[in-house]
Length: 100
Image (cartoon, rainbow, N blue to C red):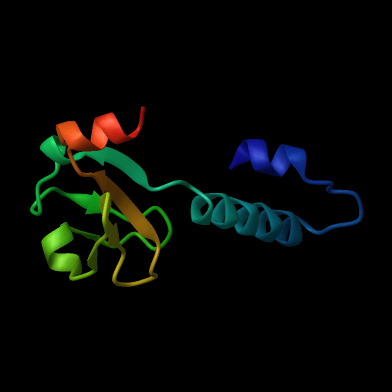
């Protein structure tokens, strides 16, 4: 947070305005934080997750927002809808051959 305040122009602003602007920049940075990407072998529906935006804590199972796609599954925060986790399915031999 101190780094963010140092980057903000303080000229003509009250300390409350500077802190508010720094906090808003901090939140925006957290919103833009990428979801964690892991391999399927490392995935567990009961693994602990914490949302960097709203602070929700739980597991993929508790979130209730697991979406299954062709190549990955993803887990979203039930409180603020931030994507928290992307899990890559293992590739089969046919999948890896089709890439070459």
